[in-house]
Image (tube, rainbow, N blue to C red; front, side, top):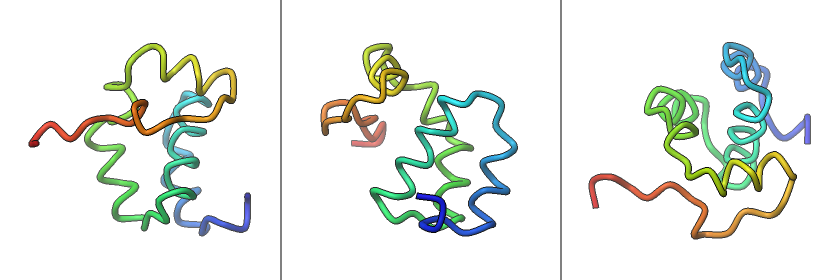
Amino acid sequence: MIALLSWTHYIVLMSLDDNTEIDYYIHKCITNNLSVRRLRELIKSDEYHRLPDETINKILNKEELTILDEVKNPII
């Protein structure tokens, strides 16, 4: 898992305080092949804090996330 992200990804992630939030963004980067620019956009939009409580509990328990757990696009 460590080799799947660049050093720049990790520098951006080190600015976060919550380990669960970091795990969430690492998971997003790996599964969606996110660039550093897109990762910064997600963090800036505060996507993690818009997640439902059930999804955060799944992340804490290291359960598999489903498509329903993803944050819906507010524009659509």
